[in-house]
Image (cartoon, rainbow, N blue to C red):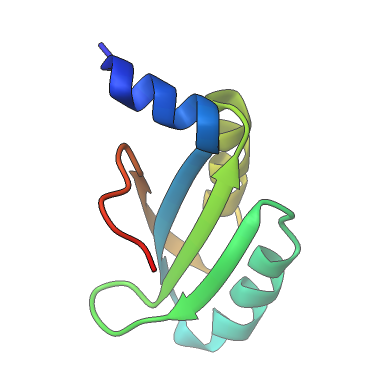
Length: 94
């Protein structure tokens, strides 16, 4: 069950989502990044070091919209794995 403070936050700010994307083969990085840039809900794309190569920040109006877009990401050629993180509370931001 979603707590009331989470529900209020989502209603006021939309749904903020981060996705960690693993790309294989690595030669597909540019292609995957270009496909991600075409998604209007994407606010930021960065390359990262670690088990994933790309971090993507999204903002959605609804969970249905989020689900549809995140399903599309997993279908992009070269995307091996996608770990999705939904923001439930913003603690600090400058």
